[in-house]
Image (cartoon, rainbow, N blue to C red; front, side, top):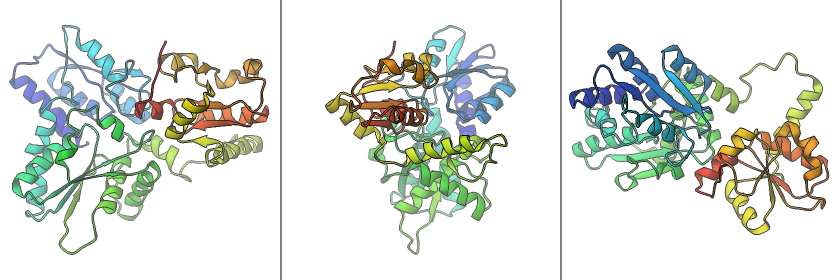
Length: 395
């Protein structure tokens, strides 16, 4: 179970009570995983068929369990949490399916039953279980249903309760939450009603997740680590403070995300040769070298001012769906064959880019081996570029 179980149940119940859906209805819902899983359980119990368009960046565990529950899963190139503005993304696909007469989209991103679920349940539980002593309420920001519904209830009981939202940076790897740029696109993001907003970086979120599991024996997931890190940064350690931090989900659906972000958890590949280990080490050294990587804002300035050749090392299908304008597609495996089309001048400015800034590091190493002096990889890749609101093209 997860915090989205409350939302799914409330949305279905309200839709049934209003006559919006009936027993023969098919449901479609864009999701980063947990709402889809919760809707799957409710739908199975009530006899609804469910389709969930989602990002292929979502942890494999979630996609597998959705299929196990009988959901029609449609995987798409999208950011980790569905982006409302992505023309080829999960939300756009869900809207397309919802236009078919037999389908209905409950739409957690704009359905008032989402925050209302927390106004009815989470907020009152926090108030009663703290005997009205709660001084701070902290939640990670995804659809913002938890913080809005719970926060509204708590403010009605005591206007002095501080409501604090925590969010990750662009290009993050924390499932289920949104960067500030993506939050501006969601209907329930109302920062004027919050008492504080705190950004927590990817590394700190996973570090805190590991500490919660190891030091507190609480099997909380990455977004829980992010929320707690934000609370510790925003709330002073003073007598009388009673802070409630929402842990939305357990760790069990995020092992692949944790393996990618916490060192020392995975076993070394049994067949890894010393040469492969050396290459992996070179890639990690590249990631940490400020002369070889650029954050997305610096890359955008570089793109505007220096007009570099942007080399997108993803496969053609991914490039055609979303890419930096003017970029050329040279898949990583084909770079040696396509090298003849690169600039003759070895001091020409080059940017290597992929979806999230991983494959592009290998691109930088290859281009450096050819003697190119002014080449960088974009941290966060096209996903971070898109989240920052920079120009994106598609074929």
